[in-house]
Length: 490
Image (tube, rainbow, N blue to C red):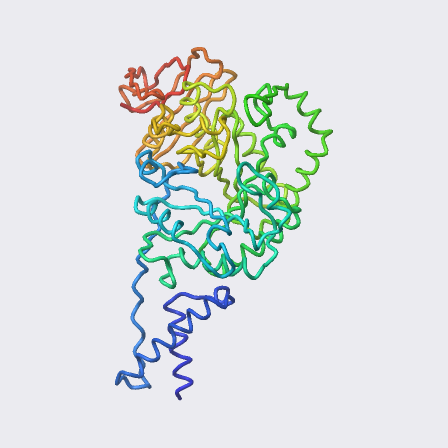
């Protein structure tokens, strides 16, 4: 009788806690279930309820941590403490976690700095993506650590797989918000985990090794938290997209700084790239990961630094790679910024608006500007793209980002409504209405007409937040566009 009662009560608990067979495949989750069963059975034995009519357990109180709203597409890389990220209108930020930083010696975890960073960010109601980087002085392939990727060491396959999986379980469990071994004071759970930063650029083992690493890490994360979403490491594929004919510009810019900038015609670049062993190797790696790795990720990431239009080329290239292999998944860009070359403050400010509109119009769901605060490990071309400069000054691009986030609050969708030779116009649908964004591609004023059947005036706001009111005539408005503007009913 006692065994049957235990079984019945276990079944009730499984019902109330919503576990399923997939979840129960994980040993950690099984332990959690058993702990709840034992605790409940012990409590029931202390009551006087008749065994033939057991009282069902109370519905468990929800965990205190709650996931913040993510309705906007505005994210940030290198977002600082979270104060400015909240002020500027971002809804989600990205953080990097290197294995050796959180576990400097095997089995010795030091999460104080990560805890502080997550708490500061969560206190401002921001969601978090954590990029897990398998760089450890004791647990990573030594050959990878001997290479340099910027000022950091590169990364590679763990040499101690059990230690790596234990690390992943410990970290995910600490921040998953399930009430078991959570970080003290955790306000919002972390549900997005990226497996490495840039596997084409910073992963120093083979693509086959990354595929195995992706599978192992993804399965370990989801065993610890079945609700977690896995993000594929960023594809640095803008030049491959150019070589494969996705480019919309007339020229291709290559180089890592102004000092080594090279400008080629598209045809010249395609001819050069197609005959390059580096291109062929990178293309083979991409095709391997996208054809065999898709069971192990939920979201695709790509990184883009260049001209705003390049986000369109990369997004279309990634979409076609997935389509070729019979699937489609959400596309994010966890690092995106412009202009990488030919920088001026004015162009920087306008390119914030252009990049977001072009990306959203190409189906990129979230775009993380890189960066909010300067990442001093990078060179000057990266540093000057920070929205807050090295003197802690909020640039005009900072306010352009904030303006875009305000105008697209409650964002739902973007539609390209005019893509003539000389103009780009997008219609954004939000919870409160429609907001058009348009600009001239020539730098000269170009004329357009937009329908506003229910308005008497429209409000036209440029990237510096200067507002002009324009009258609507017979249900439409005629405008001359040059730099990017927001257009909405007054």
